[in-house]
Amino acid sequence: MGYAKFIVAIFFLLCACKKEEAVRRLSFSEQERSWFIYHVGQQFKFKSAIGDSIIFLVDSVIDYFHPEYKYPDTTVVIDEAETYVAHLTAADDFINIAFYKSSLYLSDASELNETIAWHDVTGQFVEIDAIKSETPFTVKTLNGVTYDKVSAAVPMSDVLYPWTRWESAYYDQKSGFIELIDTSGASWIRQ
Image (cartoon, rainbow, N blue to C red; front, side, top):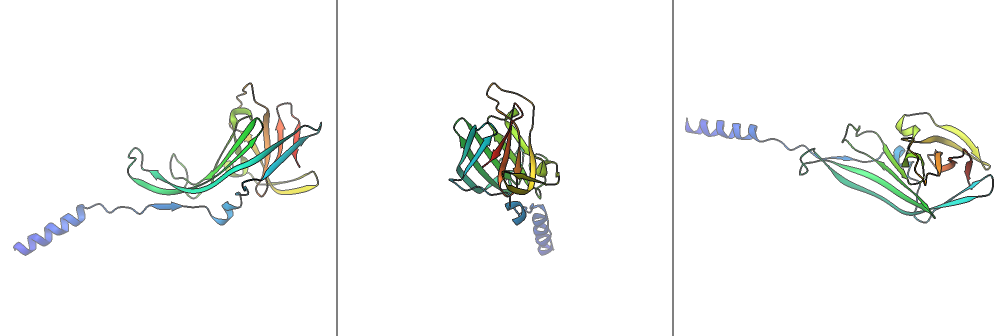
């Protein structure tokens, strides 16, 4: 009888122990990695019809995993999520492009997310339609080059700041920004 009680006690003890869930590793697929075209030292030059130009330089690129925590408990890791960030600077502007995976804040862990912080654009953040709204790519020929995976990069808000210079842009999956539209509506083409 004592042996049976011991077995029952062990059984209840094992049932009471909560099994820890394995931490998921949210990483990019090969198809999603096709967006990652940036390398330190790259230059992207844009020129307007009247001859003005701006050059963005890629000064840093990182691809890393970071823990995501079970809200509000910041001690329980639920995911190891991958993030890819490229930072581009110009004389008086910068663009920070981040592609990431996440399961937090109603994000779908299987989908690619992006955030583009751009200092001199309307609202200071743009979204790539092909990612955000799953809008189909278009084809655009600029300066003799045909881009076949083009999407609009549209501001997330219409807030104008005193330094706002850009209204929107076009982004090619394999080439990055290919056309910038300034607040006067003028097009600046990638050279």
